[in-house]
Image (cartoon, rainbow, N blue to C red):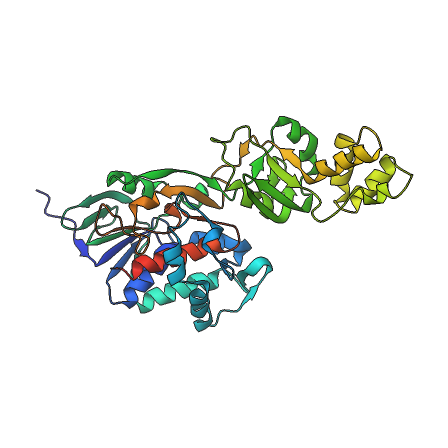
Length: 397
């Protein structure tokens, strides 16, 4: 027998993942006197926190409601969100004297850098005596009387295991499917993960017609399957992006809706043809002028090239007006997990306690954050779910 047996580290809880949810869970449990180990496979904590919000971290949203989240069970998130609110996180930010500002639609950003939020979480964890183990590669997870986690560095034992490993989004940042593997190991159901808040790719005809307009942005309303979002839309070299498109992409799925179009209102609150109807001078020059009052010049010119009315009658112009407000786009797909801000789907919420995030089947096993089938809209909602679900678990054991 090898006499150099691995020394086991004994803890009250082991948290897999040092991102937003994992850090919140750790500090909550640590402040309650629990001995907590956070195992992070990367060489540093909170990499996605640092890149979020263009480096300013859109850390929550003042208008956070359960309706801002997608899930097979739309009621699941209500409990955690009600018990750890945006006001709770703002109080923590203000305690650490981090300057922040409200931008559009209730979104709160750091004035300086995302680093402020990560430093705050790390400091809270230090005060709570949380232990961090970076560069930890998980080799094996077992359950006997408690959980045993074997890594490339050491062996950890605890009665509680919290999975805060995130989703599949942005693999170059270190995203893996570990959380889903753990769920499968213990017999939990998974809603198939898919990219969300992700740019859409044009089908060939639209790619030919519009992709040379890459960089053009306009206010738009994107609609699909009863959902709609009014924000900026951006034409890219492969398709469409911008907040309005990212939002609607979470509802459009390549697998279930391969032939379903999204509808785009290119000129919200604008009657483009009104000037034409009020004059006898109706031609392509007048139409282009009317379009340019509502759309960026390059997009207006291209739209007229592709959709010029058959005639200049009132009926034809009415049809043209409708088309401007209901541009049907049949996406060929999405840009995938490489460009997705978050992952939709994940651990089936039927498997978890809505109050504590604990597995109903496996006592002591918790899942929090993005790995769970709860996905927020763009604008700070996914961070709020990380804080709320992390706090729910961290207060439970």
